[in-house]
Length: 472
Image 1 (cartoon, helix red, strand yellow):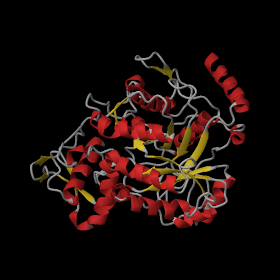
Image 2 (image 1 turned 180 degrees about the vertical axis):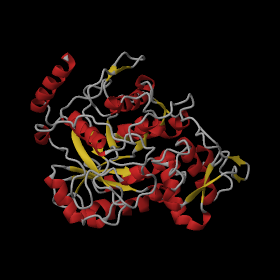
Image 3 (image 1 turned 45 degrees about the vertical axis):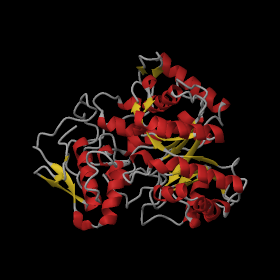
Image 4 (image 1 turned 90 degrees about the vertical axis):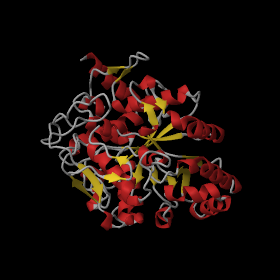
């Protein structure tokens, strides 16, 4: 094939010419009880040539272990601290002093991620985001760190109103004036970048009947032409990132750069999680590394070399949600690789994608997507998923955070002022979110579990005047 020959030639030239074009980092999540100590983790990162790491907090043991390592670090101010950071300059200054100034520059902190996917946070922290970012930036100025350390906030693709075709990319209209314009103005003023969490796996899992697996895994494929701009896309990842670029362009913020703060593919999943397998995870992450390190941007932004953080360093056995959530790791807690892929240009010289092989139970076609964006109803009769009130508030809140965040449940109706906000209890909100997730997953067995915090009912639940959907 002519295109295959061209691709091989391009890869060879790229390896020689664009070795420093892009950058690969990794997310170091720690929702597990069996991970190695931070000192061993730092040694592991260095042995693999990984020189960027993103953490989801600012744990002293981790930041101390990274001291003197030469690894660039992104720390996180959790969603739960947004209110305090927004309301109090003193709190923001103290947080920077304890979690940044105490370690930098020996620990090379290069960015602060303020919250994570706050637009889907069920605790309605969105309105605190911009004030918190500004107060943290003022604190960095106080310590003269503002030129070294950038401030941003990771957004999920659910912040987009439209993402297909890429040329039609746009942000959710209710967030444009109140959040995105101030956010992008802040990023422009401070020379920072927009952090984006992008998971082609989610799109493929829900639409495997219409999305080519080769297209999702960066493999050879005929490509998809965007009717809006005429560009041909050969990967779902590029299409997703260009949808964000298009959304930025629509607001006249073409100059804002993007850092992909999370992306990955699970090596194991439940039966209904189409495509979750070791071969597919190896193909996605291995080909993504090659895609990033050999240079070149996206079809819409060909010069936009990307910094991409793989999710995640380890499998995390204490995470809520389906089996896939505990199996995004590049490594087992024993530090053994889940699959063998390189993370450096040197390693790419001997890297070859594993040929595609069907994986029983994980490669079957899903029900076609309907016009509303969900999947068709199951044939097992009407059932709903609700919260178990007796598991305790903490466990319900953690499961609720997952459902409305990474789980992709529609939690807009339980936001303040919306139809299902009242009664304002964790159990009521969790029940609505759990059911939204359950219905979106076609009510497949295992999707109403949430770590034992949920169960299936056969009568429509009611909390006040809120009606629960039976399908999407």
